[in-house]
Length: 224
Length: 224
Image (cartoon, rainbow over all chains, first blue to last red; front, side, top):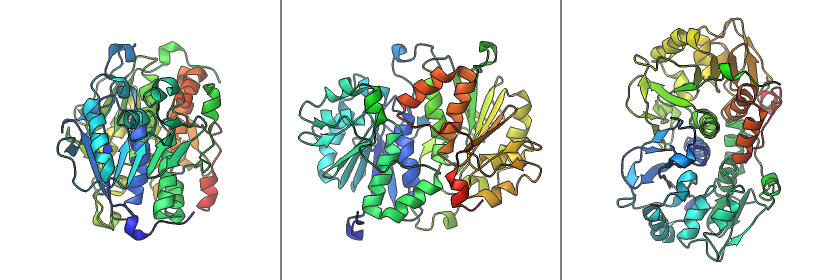
């Protein structure tokens, strides 16, 4: 697999966040990209509906049956109404919050931003957001395997792939659930910034990568 | 491996953060524990020197040679001077910030908090903080393999274990670098909350666990 020309190596990354996002969907990919930013000049924007802190806390009591007070909050740098002008890569995480009722501004942001992007990366049920934005129509894609039925129903015109750690179709990379975002990001880094960059990051993270996009014991586990 | 009696299953977790912490050191373990908190009543405190947002951004220009603007900020809930009174488990991450000069308040917090804890978990070069706090003296422990020489020098009275995904000695769990924190946390969950809880979390994360604490190709990679 050859490395992309430097001219198409993106600089400006963004990740969108919403209440009850899944922490590792965001911070698995970003940890890898934080490391990449020590070898390439990169910028990151964190984009949400407002500039207030955004929490992983479940948004409904039924999602948090033991009433745990166990969450983390991240600070946005930009809003959906005032996003960075020059976004090239957008990362869309998943999480319990993708089942919340008020996700329209998030979906609208993906719909109107996608045409300017060089690359879109979804993690886990973030594929459901991209599907609702219409940007996966006619494409191959994957998503979280435990949430498969509910998420794939959001994209009736998407060619959903059951057995996939990730799927790369055109300029869109869709990841399976949660930790798969790390493998997906490393595959993205390998293709765009080169295999040495990806290997260095994986070794620095002490992470045993899955490099086969069709590796997926979880599709079988969840009877897909 | 038997599950701990319910009486010793902790409820009150804390994680300390400092400038230039490694994102996945924090959010790998916390993602697993966020999921655990949906099955057990748990509380989380995020503890730092002040209540201001704490960033992953490298603290010196030499650590960020391309002057990337690529970082994430987390909001603390407590400070070292006003910590939660009832902390039972403390998680200590690593990262470039463990090489910063002004880490004394962080180290002091670990030193004075350890005696009240049920369990201490360090991730990556967080073991260097625990070593400097003196709480690893006379114990077996491990740390990041790429940063091995510099980190182990901080604990001359620690029995450092080169080939280890994690080490469990007494009530302290020390993890190898970055992603190893996920395996360490799942091993901790298995011992304290039961194997069903750990397996459910790993499957929900679509994460292929390493369950052998001596699995460590990175020790060989870095010639240890």
